[in-house]
Length: 172
Ligand SMILES: [Zn+2]
Image 1 (cartoon, rainbow, N blue to C red):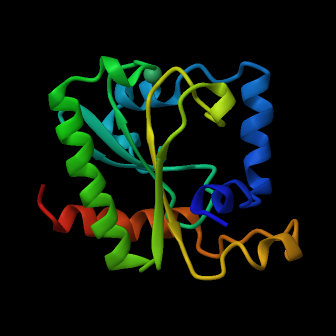
Image 2 (image 1 turned 45 degrees about the vertical axis):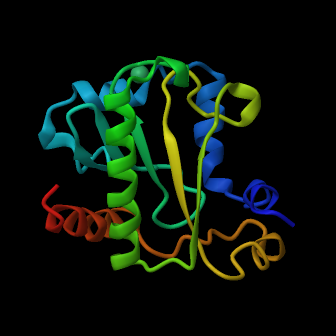
């Protein structure tokens, strides 16, 4: 079983409200909403860091504990529209995210990926974002058995606070 098929098999029932709302057209673009919101709302939005061109945020409907995303601020759907400076900051914030997660929740590995187009599984297909999904040994083995049981044991905002502190300590 390769990593891609393992990721697809992760069962995350708490994502259903998001999927339902999406299909009803409730969401316009939550990433643009974050870019435009005042910084005082960053914690509420699970926004970890505002770069010059890129955001680092925590996924509100995570596949696993500590599921982060790196998103260019510009509302573009095609990777070909990203400029060299965008890529540089995406790379930097990816490194920051990996380090912060290793220092806090210490995963055994990561899946990194971009879902391009609805068919790929993108929840938000109009605004590019990279997923950073922490993985632990055995995390796909027990989930099909427990079915509806949520595997995320740590509160979303507890995890946010820890990762936020780790990001701030890096002084990027
Ligand atoms: Zn957008």
